[in-house]
Length: 113
Length: 114
Image (cartoon, each protein chain N blue to C red):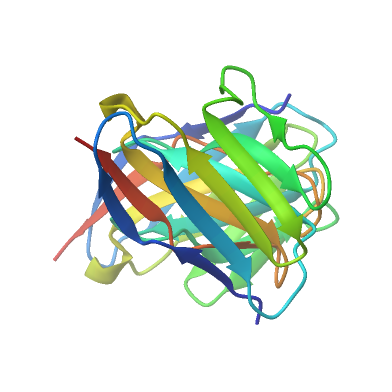
């Protein structure tokens, strides 16, 4: 079945630094990747939608200059959290249409100290 | 855009009892309604889904019903077991497995007491 590999699974970074999260579709082509953020005990909130070869579409209230999304190939989409601050600490998870419905990555736990 | 409401936010049942979680949606264009189970720190796992051309779908102890006229759908778990304890999310999309985004409900924390 369709698999999305997400790395890293967890990362701790210092305030002010940048962190890159990668999602790769392993056995299918993902022309679209959805990026979600999930705070503790809350739901998955869509941040942005990346499309291969074009600019990402950001949801209202999400800073596109802070959350940089690149979808340079049919199998790789990346999210870079720039100038991270403690309030950016969250669980970030990607999802691509594929398989039966949507396939989710395993998530990245980001902690900014 | 789509808005998905989910109730209850928490649900505690005794092992062997049934559990029901309900969701409503706002966008009449939505026609794909998946349910996910998420354990702490893990990715959501699809447990069942339904499309708008079907009113009910069952898979062993899990069933989903859809009332497209009223724009609501429900998850039914029978003979609950402690391992069913998790957070459950409903979601809606104009088309499953396509480039349309999923909108999630706020989740239900289900606790099954032994």
